[in-house]
Image 1: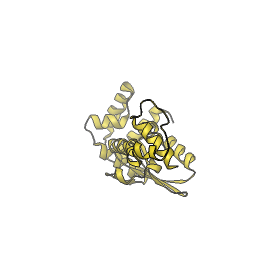
Image 2: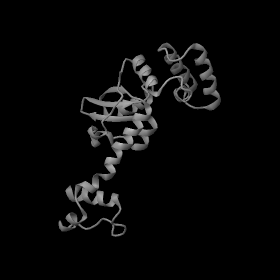
Image 3: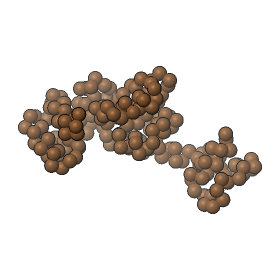
Image 4: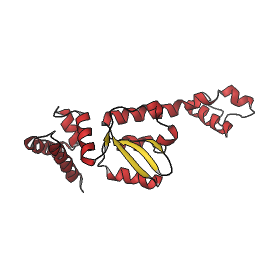
Length: 189
């Protein structure tokens, strides 16, 4: 399915779900061709429907659960960070938890089959998908991955590491958060 075909299919879903009239659909598809932007973004930018309305319509059409809140603090880092942040943001998908049998994830576009297939192949597990507005998914991704950046500061202080007889991995720039984090990881292993 080409990009334009996918955009037309999304437009037809939004029409079926009552967010667009057939006239609005034709107009938005024409603008989509001209601007080369996502149809869902155009619908939101033109105040035809809210981002939440679009996400709910896609969830209903796909028979998936819609969620409008995500507790970033409750998302386990070991689950979320299985995906690189750049991939998570580009695909607007966040792993919320995982076990050997199932992976819990939230996405903005449940029709992004390639991303769902990638995650299924990477984890080797069944995927339970929930749908949320794109801005909520991206905001939560940012907040979850920020916890990873500050995790090194919480593990141990540099003095504790050096008291254990462990020196810095790199003598220069010892105040850099990533170096403190890596030092703390090595000292705990």
